View 1: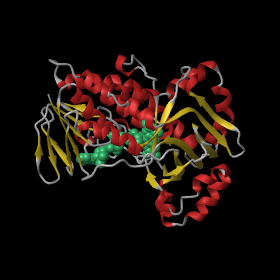
View 2: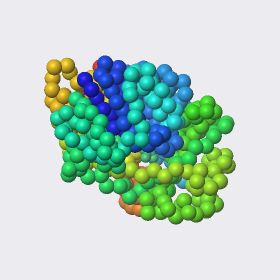
View 3: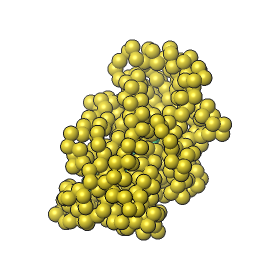
Length: 397
Ligand SMILES: Cc1cc2nc3c(=O)[nH]c(=O)nc-3n(C[C@H](O)[C@H](O)[C@H](O)COP(=O)(O)OP(=O)(O)OC[C@H]3O[C@@H](n4cnc5c(N)ncnc54)[C@H](O)[C@@H]3O)c2cc1C
């Protein structure tokens, strides 16, 4: 089968790789001349690590990343608000903090040996004949026809409307700024740490292991901000922010040492994608283009990796591609729908100007989370394994 994948992000690269490994002829199209990862770190869950195992890349990532055993969220007084441990899911369970560039490079380096043709500088703007898709780029060149076109162009997808004209993808009103720092004495190792002051202030530190240059002890530091205040953050000087960050989290001082100007940070915004149907003929959305949401639960890249592996598995020889795509979507939504709903519900408790939500969070979360049933369910949600239906065998962590 001839397949095209649009978008050289985590979901697109994983999809190209999974399809090529199953013997399909795959072309990956990316609008940037030199594709590159955006942002600094992310948390791979046991679910995403299982998908990487299916792609033969889990060991390389385990060697580079930082083991995460728990999520430790506290208020300004140091009182625990969130305390979720991977061992509540399974003894010995863990997540993996990774540098985005490392994940990007491992996936990218695997493409060519698997036989994937990568074409960069190709900005796909239109699709003709969804049943046997031909992709048209901004210079009028035609790519295809293909039997399958996988649209993995991210949460701000411009191609989504070709699959689902009524899809919506509004920006969340809050985003975050991110930077890399070094945790030389390892005081933040082992956990994703967060500090909260109501829902209007959130600072987090995620250990991510070695950077692409091999330097160990990297952490990803993030600070929550309303999207409307981001321009002011990048136009201002960092002194006022440093003072505020240190008042929230004095122990983070060593991490701030090398952060001198706002240019040391990157900006992240997120969209709440409501696509309805993901497929149309031989076209399908995957990754953030299909189900982007806020990163509150740290699942987006993991869900994209699972999409990639599961899509390749569900393309059964002899069955029309359009039918396989409908089955793929039906199976995947039993998982992605849960995470989108949970992210929508939880995000305002951590990123908003509201007072009641964070008050309830601060006084109810920790005691309720200790109830065995709640603890079990929230551990399954945290680890990315929650889905309403069976998990394909190759994706069981
Ligand atoms: C602040 C923040 C923190 C996060 N933390 C986590 C975390 O801890 N764990 C986790 O699992 N997830 C996390 N996520 C989510 C995760 O980053 C995304 O879910 C994931 O990167 C989406 O991958 P993607 O491949 O679907 O899209 P993208 O990474 O957006 O890739 C899309 C690609 O398509 C290309 N493209 C776009 N349009 C076209 C076109 N017309 N033609 C050709 N190419 C095109 C783009 O250039 C890009 O390369 C976080 C997100 C944010 C913003």
